[in-house]
Length: 277
Ligand code: LIP
Image 1 (cartoon, helix red, strand yellow):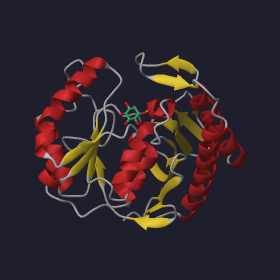
Image 2: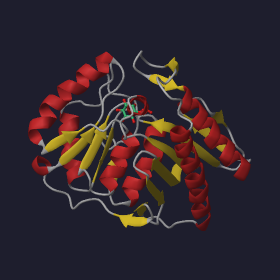
Image 3: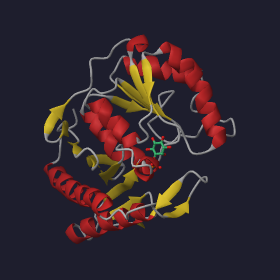
Image 4: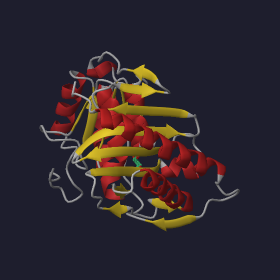
C-alpha cells in the first residue's frame, strides 16, 4: 500500500466538510414541487438542475475559504488552476437523474488530487446519510468504520454494477455488451451513480463494477475509496481507468471481467474506434 502523507489527512477533513455541507444543502434547500432544469449537456436527458449549480458553488466556496491557493475541476464548470499543486475534483450531484426523480441514490463527491494522483476523497449520500471516505495509503471507511471489498467470486457468481451513457448510440452499444455480460455473471445492478457504485464495491454490496464514458469527477473520490478497500481500478488492455472504460473489482475477478469486456470491444467509441487512453 502507498505510503500516506500526513498532509493528506487534512485534505480529507476539507473534503468531508465541503461534501457534507453541500449534501445537506441539496436536501434542505430543494424547492418544493417540480425541480427546475437549468440546462442540458450532451443530450436532452443529460440535465443540470439549479441544485447541481448551487452545490458546486457551495463546495468551491467552502474549500476556497480553507485553502485559497487550490485549483478546481467541477462537473458544472468550476475550472480554476491553483498555485498549491492541489486540485479539487467535484461532482456536486452524482446521480442527478435519481435526484430529479427523488430516488435515494445520489451523492456529493469531492476528491483532492496532488498532481495527477487522487490522495483523499469523500462521497456523501444525503438520502441515506452514508459517508464514504478514504486517504491514499490509509484504507477506506463508511461512516468512519473500515470497509473491504468481498473475496472475489468467480465471474459466474459475481454481482456486477454498471451504468449507461446519455447518448442513444452509446446506449445501444452498451446494451449489446450487456447481452453477453448478463448470462455470464450472477446478476447486474444499475444504481445510477458511479461514485455510489464504486463505494458499494468498497463495502461489499456488489462484487465488481464497469462503465464506459465516465468523467474524472464521476470517478475521482469513489475510485480512491474502492482502491483503498482493496479493489483494482483500471481500464482495458492494460490502460488506466478513464472515459474509455472503468473496471473495478478485486484482483482475479478484475482480470476475468476485463478480458470479457475487451473481447467485446466494450471500450469502442461511438465512431467505432478504440477510445484514446
Ligand atoms: C452519472 C454517472 C452514472 C452514469 C450516468 C451519469 P451524473 O453521472 O454517475 O454512472 O451511468 O449516465 O453519467 O450525470 O449524474 O453526474
